[in-house]
Image 1 (cartoon, rainbow, N blue to C red):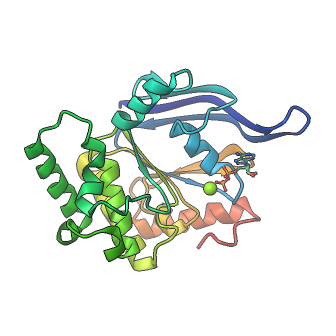
Image 2 (tube, rainbow, N blue to C red):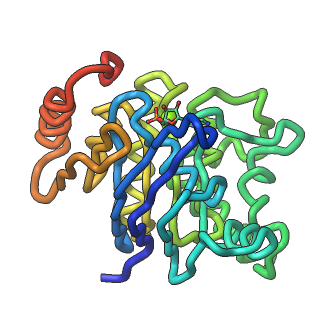
Length: 255
Ligand code: ADP
Ligand code: MG
């Protein structure tokens, strides 16, 4: 199995010399091609901090992160922006669409600077729009579509350049339950058919149940991980709930 991401002994501290706050410690993690990994844990556990480090938005205080064979910790800003564009796809809670562009233009934005031909771009946009069920709204503007459609547009944009890794932080956080289910089913289908590698932070056990593996962070450390394997989504959902219960405290918002 091909390793897409390797995190070695990650530690992250915030604050000043006098008041150091350790947000992450002893994080060792491998993610393989074709995985759909969920990251859960109580509020303040360090989930977003970890995702920001993998996103190259933030640096670890110590430790190494290798994504698609490249060590991202010691890259200069120019190489990093190139790396982000080619290797990473992002899905945020608040969509981050450009209001002045249509859905289609938003989706193909990551290819704007690439050498991919117009015909190939057209084909990719249509294929992805089919996966996410947004073919009919390609010519609309963000203000004309629902939150669920915005998030499916954002997810389409995240995948269009065939990144090595898609990183999502609470992608269903602002969605109603039907739109959330819709997005998760599409992400899951994408993962199954394209072998897309996805890492998704969520506090929602239902969302996590779509993943193949869920890792739990508590107080900045990896606490446990579970694998779906032959279980149904519903069985895995129960298992996620059981682990959350054993984590204890500070996550009244888990369901
Ligand atoms: P989660 O996403 O699991 O809710 P975060 O990763 O956002 O948690 O935060 C983990 C801890 O690190 C929290 O205690 C938070 O206050 C702290 N933290 C996060 N970002 C910063 C920052 N830029 N400066 C100082 N402390 C931070
Ligand atoms: Mg967070």
